Length: 344
Ligand code: NAD
Ligand code: WQD
Image (cartoon, rainbow, N blue to C red; front, side):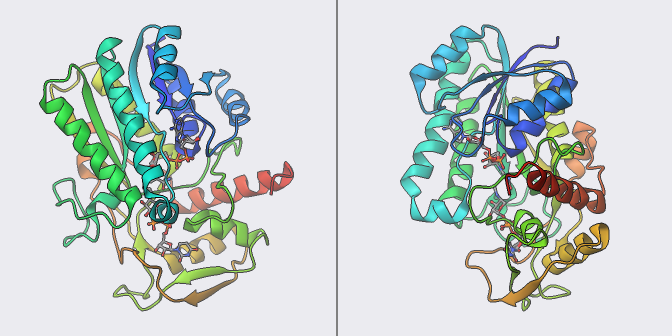
């Protein structure tokens, strides 16, 4: 066993895939999740794939007493991967205080507990949203942070600043901040995947639900952008590829591969794909039609962004490997599995 890792939000979309990869790599995982955006039966999927059921505590990260009990119950936690957060951009505009309370208090509690329990490092889930619309594409880690377009985006920026300031003040731990581009897809086993609550706000779950007939048609938000086909461009990254980067980040901190106390990495493929391009890729890869219509722009959308992932490629020795075809096929297999299970 390589050591005990606390995965907050480990029942969620990216956390569940990362738990599988951590366990496959020989780490012992303790999950804390309040199940506000996930279901406990995800643990069955994790167990099926990896053969190990991770320890699970239904605790809210904003609850300091509850979190202290977790550290007491599982002595020797060496590292934390902090996924737990509220993440819906639109909801954050309507309920900003809820977003600030949840996303900021959760991190503050962890950072205060880490020195008390000798935790050596924390990996933080940030987002390319911190770059806003970059002047230069592809965007690398040195690009300026732009004013946030939503309270959710602002919580990511504030969390990055909190970690930076704590490390600057000689906190006795390291941190790696991972800025994800657009994670999509599911584990190839289709045992775990993305399960959004209600009507999906993100493109791929809406697309697969439309292909399934759950939604009538997909609205493409704008075809009058300054891009080759007029629709917005993103860097869609396979969730398993993304998860593997977390294992490398944890190993890097715990094995002192670098002296750096704080590092930032973009996690993307380096390829920009338009909304219309993604629909076409999905239709060709799966043979399933996606009814769609062009509608007006969505407020707050960035026109185009994709990663320069070279720093992560070179320094972490990590590269996104899955093709977009295989990735959308994995998302479709997951959607079919949800139907088979009678969930959707
Ligand atoms: P998710 O909602 O599927 O997973 C988050 C998990 O955290 C859920 O299981 C939820 O129940 C839990 N949670 C929320 N608040 C909690 C709290 N206070 N205490 C304990 N558990 C709590 O989201 P995800 O897509 O897996 O995202 C994981 C992280 O990555 C989040 O921090 C998110 O902001 C960040 N991120 C996601 C994306 C994306 O597109 N999915 C992109 C960039 C960054
Ligand atoms: C992708 C593209 C839409 C839905 C958001 C957050 C970001 C990050 C991921 C966490 C855009 C278009 C979408 C639809 C569409 N989360 N679209 N019809 O906007 O890049 O990022 O989620 O950090 O912070 O802002 O992702 O999946 O919502 O949209 O045309 O029904 O698909 O306009 O161009 P986005 P998304």
